[in-house]
Length: 139
Figure 1 (tube, helix red, strand yellow):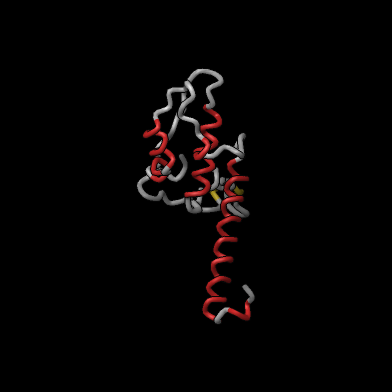
Figure 2: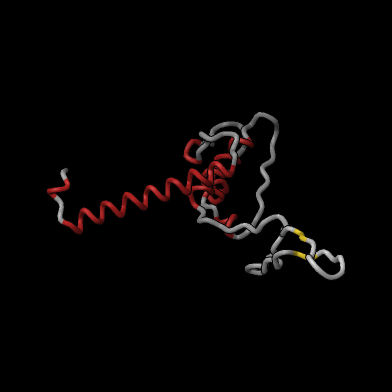
């Protein structure tokens, strides 16, 4: 399909779709790099429920929706050695990178500086962050 065959609105729509897809891909790749997952190829779609690890299909599919992340819940995967706990965690992590919008995380601690004049008291150079949604700022 040549660009001469498209009307201006169709051409513009394709251009916008391509830009949105490109930005979403870059965001996903940035999140994946920041996550530093051990098994990059792990995917929710590749989970084998027939293996003897006694994985509850309904529970795992519910976890794959990522709702537990939005609810600020923790997840602990337990089981014997060699059943694929790390692989499952990486698959859930990859899905979280794909689903979750960018979230601003506060810095570990604001820098401390010494005042230029007056008594030698130490102060914070920036004000402490305000907690959001009823959660503490540093947790």
